[in-house]
Image (cartoon, rainbow, N blue to C red):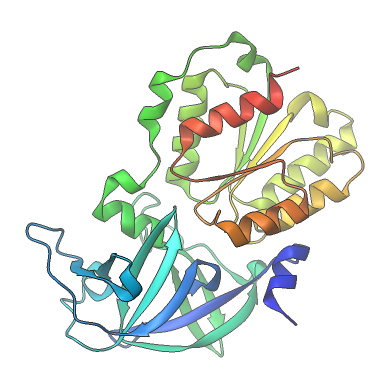
Amino acid sequence: MDSKILMESGTNELEVLEFNVNGNSYGINVAKIKEIIPYQTVTPVPNAHPSIEGLFMPRDVMITAIDLRNCLQFGASQPGGLFIITNFNNLDIAFHVDTVVGIHRVSWTEIVKPNATVSSADESISTGIVKINDKLVIILDFEKILSDINPDTGLKVEEIDGIEKNSKRGEKPILIAEDSILLNRMIVESLKKAGYYQLIHTANGQEAYDLLMDLKQKGTVHQHVQCLITDIEMPLMDGHRLTKLVKDDEELRDIPVVIFSSLVNDEMRRKGELLGANAQLSKPEIGNLVHLIDGLLLDD
């Protein structure tokens, strides 16, 4: 079955590319990958972060190369291996890995969040762990890795300061589905700062959907949820599946759904539109998120 069809139909599946660094197995969502190429010589950048190997220019496009071995505290990589060229948060970044194993199709229900014994929520660079062929594969949080190297690639929370206040925002309850505890907190704090203080935040699509079903059963769903903001990549249930379930439900479909994700590129935007998302936005643009919500909830 074609993976594009799977994503468009919101079946809660994803394709994971398994790769190796220092003999360990890691994974990345294939939706983030533009291409995989053999290692190329890079030009070092003076005074750059230790995990930045340098710059190179395949097909006249300047790309930053990041040493994933260094990020994972295994020391510096040597020439050789592969570059996984990615696109997320509207950035093209190459990650230097040792080898690529292959692509596996898995369900988000199979992906388990690492617990507090592994690392604190704010420090973890893993979005989940999945068992593939009796082997544990750690799915890395590439957004966290990149924001640790350059904080300017993360949420631009300073954009909230310049937003004009509107008292009507306080009347609109919003449900948030975001698995990153750090990003969940930052989104909540930013929306509250803008005046949206009736917020319910959940850790994944399944929690958000269960809450909607509970409110629906009580007949109070529209009193408590007038907008849904969802990430795409989440364990148990992803944002595309959540969007499909909401838009397929006669009682819920009028709730505006905003997909707020690092994965909002042209292809993923088309898939979100097919599933019925009302708006989609790349994750750094928290200020634009407020404007989008205003347009959905405040404009008569």
